[in-house]
Length: 539
Figure 1: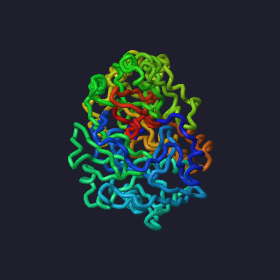
Figure 2 (figure 1 turned 90 degrees about the vertical axis):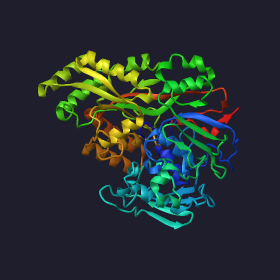
Figure 3 (figure 1 turned 45 degrees about the horizontal axis):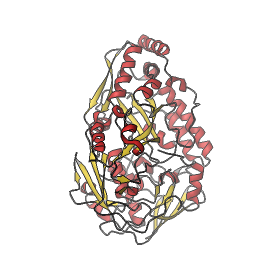
Figure 4 (figure 1 turned 90 degrees about the horizontal axis):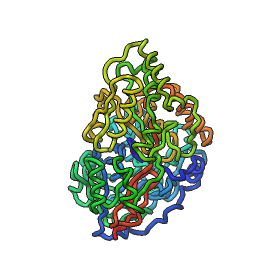
């Protein structure tokens, strides 16, 4: 997801597949029988204005994702370490990794009283996959029989058997399909949603641990107020009364509120405070590995950055960046220089890809490559990197562009946007005419999730419009493998193509760096860097 979803001790693909084949794991967190939160104990936390109405299949960024995950419950959820745990599902079974039978728990309801049944999943997935509905997560359904990205076509692979049973037929066996089912694209919807989906997204009705506090709970560009859902009976039952998610204009303001006791949980310490936050917060500070990859995208449409000339310039730009120095000086060790396009906390990761030398600082080679590109067509203008000012990116953007100035002899600057939403809108509309910051927070713990959404031809988050048929073929081959090691080898080969083409410039892997106030306890950060809000208790 657009810098959305991390894995401490991430599980192996093969192990995850085995769990689902035998009926999805029920280990991990022990399911609760009811919400036990104190209705007066509202936990405040930071967030950002969602890009779109809160429809699960069209929520693909962190601001909206944090809210949607609190409002809805899917077949499974991921525990603190990234293992799938049954939520609505009673069992998910298959003998061939292509045909699945899903049984859901009976008697579950949405907060408006609509039943959570097999149809509420199948209908929601059909809606999310249909081309004319233009949902940002539609590609998550691409492996289900009947999917089309060129015409409206029903998912013929989905069949409702009875109120608590449905079946899924995939086009081919999929090595990591079981891991995907905890992602928000696979959440159910109540029947009432389809009357006016846009209106539903402004005041969503879910089946998860929280619900909207009122019809006007979402104050745009200010905050959203959630209260515990007493009817939720899954493993994420809230131990507090609700959440107040505040949309901050910048991370410094959020950090000041945390120190002042006006904010309970913060999941993003501003880089200006990296030298101080451990002293300020003591044992309330958090710094742990996360499945987050950071980069900046260079769209193919930019002048001088396409074709052979562009390939040379992209390599030069990459080698002109001193990642080691930036992660040490600016990020105080809370980032690790990237050596691929995924994350070290995901099973199958390797730092031995052919061509990864292009990610090492080598100013002499960078100048040489830039000069070769100038022989094809002389460079003109300024190289700019767009970024959102509300996300704490100015420091590293300034450092990167200064490195390009020093090592390539070109004019390079940052191009700030006030908010993440505005940056995303220009990316969606293809109106941004500069490079721009990008990144990925894993939707589920698998290498495929870092590659397909961002670089596959026509994928929902492929904002640079990258396309390479050889890369696409390797992704398809890897996804069809039933052996995890074989799949990961295909993904390695696909990444070696990316290291030549460089549709994005990999920068570093991120830790989740956050903290909490003295007013709360039992604060844990999950595999995807998001706090386990339902566990937080107010003192």
